[in-house]
Structure formats: C-alpha cells, structure tokens
Length: 319
Image (cartoon, rainbow, N blue to C red; front, side, top):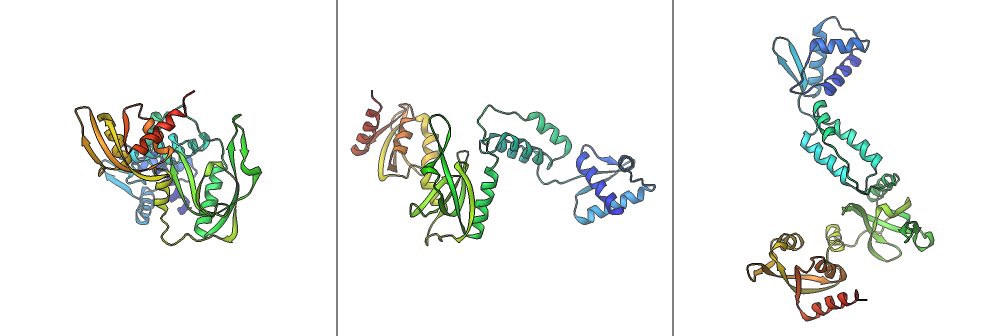
C-alpha cells in the first residue's frame, strides 16, 4: 500500500504542480482519499515525498504557513517542447494522427499549466501530411538492419499521372545493404549498397513498401566511405562535371549565396546593386535550375561552356 501511495503522490505532483502552483499537504491528502488511499497523519505524506526526493525526483518543499510541494526540474523546458512540437507539426513525413499523438506525449514533459499554454498556441497549417502509418514500421526495420549489419529487401513505388501508386519494375524486390538514414527536405532517405546498381544509392523511405530485414550480412562500405559526404553530394549541386563558374548577382541574393557556398566563397562588389561570385560547382541540371530559380536576379557569365549549357536548357523550354 505504501508503494502505491507514493506513486499516487508522484502522479499528483507531476500532473498538477509547478513553481507557481504548489500543492499543500491537505490537497495531497484529499487526492489520496478520492483514490481510496486514506492517510491520517501528515507525516506519512511527508515521508513519502522524502522517499521520492531520495530516489532523485526533483520535488521542491516550501515551508510557509504550511508545507507546500511542487515538481521542480522536468525533462524539458516549455520553449524546447514548443520547438519539438513545431517540428512535428511541420513535417509532412508524420501523419496527422501520429502528429496528434506525439504532441500529446511531448506536452507531458512540461508542467500542466505550461502544457495548456502550448495547446492554446498550436495551429495546423493546410499542408500535405503523409497518410501511410506503416512508414514508422519501415523506419524501425531499417534502423534494426543498420545496427545488426543486415541486408534489407523491399519494393519501391512511384506515382502515375493519375496519382496512383505504381510499383517500379513490376514489383521487383530491391536488395540493399543499408548504412545510414538522413532527414532532408521533409523526407527520410536511406543510403546503402544496391545489389542491382552495384554502387551506393539512396531511396526515399516513404516510397518503400513491404520491407523485410534479411538474415544475410550486409556488404560492408568501402574503406573511406563518408556518409556525410555522400549525402552532401546527393543533395547539393555536386552531380555533374566540376567547373569554376562566375555569377553576377543582385545584392539581395547574398544570403542565398552564403547559404549555398558558405562564408568563405569568393565575392567581389561590382557596383551599388550587384556583386560577383566565383565558386566551384558541378555543371548539372540541378545547378542550372538553381540559377534559373533566381528569376533573372542572378546571371551566369563564365566560363563560356557553362553559359552555353545554360542557354541550351532555356531553349529546351521554347515552344
């Protein structure tokens, strides 16, 4: 009975107290009575609270006109939980139902009155959310395979113009030795050695179906393989022929340039409204598309081969 009583007191303090809302011995006693655990002596309650303190629970005791108690340090501060909640809400990867469940769990890490404030501040944008709950099973199995160094087998789908899912290669089973997972642009990716391609490739996890972890050991990555470097190349403009290019940019693009190339990128002021950039990129459709997205605020001016390649891309859009 004593153990049950102590846990009940912990649950009451955790769910109902913080520094601005301490609980008195009387309120704790009333709670215990409502839960069919009557206590005659206040010293019994103080002894249970002392046990919680000795166990490592941060219960703060205040001695004013009467003893008052509240939970001090919790797992997270309210701003930290708000940051995590915003990440859950904004992620397309997490379904609406799972988002709600995760937010409820995250709210339990702050004080009860802070949790109420968090709920009042929540909003749901009209953005696309995943509708495939099996994604969490897929992620768990991939992580299991990575930790156990085992191969995985799965089917991979794409969308038809009718927006219907279509298994690629007539439902062929893909075999992969998974090495790492990465979150990029609201999607999970897994990278590993593909038996079919004979090299390291990546797949979007939400396009994977019917994944199984095999008993067969994975093909180990080659010596010197850098997961971070692989993903950086896959999600950057490093997918073509390396080339040093010169860009003429409006001043408003300086943040975009630094975001793309870093603070050490070579720049020169041209006039009061423009600056010039010299950077090494891989000439590819990704790079040309990035220049095109500047809406004429950025011009590729050198070398001639890169300029011609960009002009050819533009001509392909002509009717």
